[in-house]
Image 1 (tube, rainbow, N blue to C red):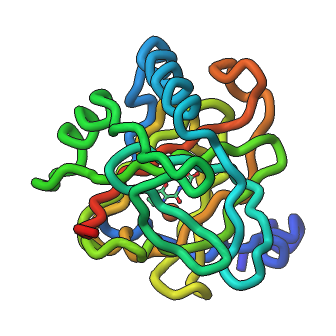
Image 2: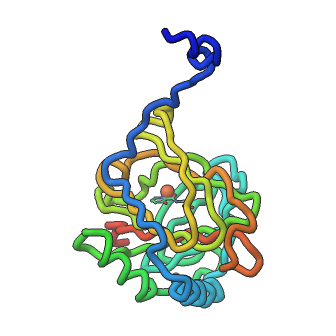
Length: 222
Ligand code: MD6
Ligand code: FE
């Protein structure tokens, strides 16, 4: 040991972070969408949520409300209620079908997913300043091997990804407006969530907050 290491206390104080490799199939495309395209996408989302309003879903069993508000595009929408998680063809409050998947999102899917089937569902998550989303694995799809393609719009988010077991080490990264994230392969089965939103980090949404879109192949016929 060199004397200066003792003098500076380097040996005592230096902590190694836990090693972590991003899971296979995790792919981040930073700034995939230009500002102009983000704005177009936002207009499309606004039109969608006029037809299928954002609602505050509740946890199965407990009925505890989530802090994230949700809606969907596509033939199927992901719904959570006291009865459990499921894919359904209609909005739980209005009873009407979800608006169709926007062309721009289908184009994105075909550009980045590498998957032959088209997505049948797109979950819209809206986070206000204090909203978060607990660690979870998306596992309600029959097409469990098809990738999920995710788009971030608005304020930055602290996104966390771990392994296939809830207690595996995790790694945190910031997602920014216009970023596209793909969970395919092993990463498709990994725990992930959103720990916080950073208010004031984007001017895309006039009132702030964050929108996340996740496209899925559902593989369900009813
Ligand atoms: C979010 N994303 O970014 C939450 N799920 O707000 C997800 O839960 C997610 O980014 C599956 C695949 C990609 C994702
Ligand atoms: Fe997810």
